[in-house]
Length: 196
Image (tube, rainbow, N blue to C red; front, side, top):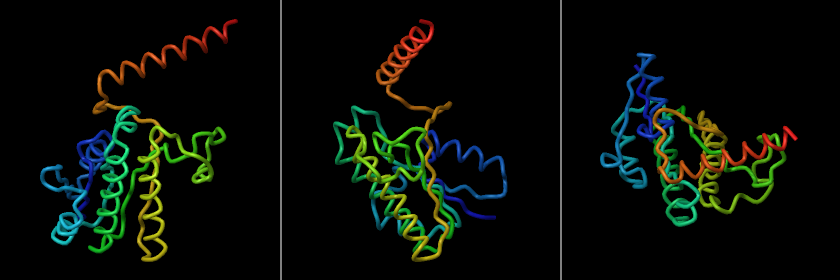
């Protein structure tokens, strides 16, 4: 039975991955809470991989937040996300893990990318300023996977979920209400403009 480590198993995407893996019944799901394993601690992550015999990794762990959090704590967002990605990707490689799936973010694309957006738009323009540190960390994760594939012959893939929603979404109530308000205003304006 393969051992599959899901980093970020308590988040929206990570918990959905765990639910899907549980349905399979042919894998042993390995998870660790933040108190059990600090993913920003290189030695702790290296020790975890060395001792666990992991076969595959789903890297859904990240420091996330809305526009306000990204603007208020840019250093924390870039540092923590870079450390998580570097530690897990390198730790997985050092432990002989051949398959890893890294979850990025659609914020990696330029602010003014032509629509509909193409994958080739990556690194072709300026990022959205409000979450640039987070986006740069996510781009680094993609490039880490690409580089390890090229140099070491592993199968480390990156996917970019664009819009997420689900039963475990954890928005701060105020942010959610503000977002819903803006959506309602946009829809009303669009509808009124279409009717005229």
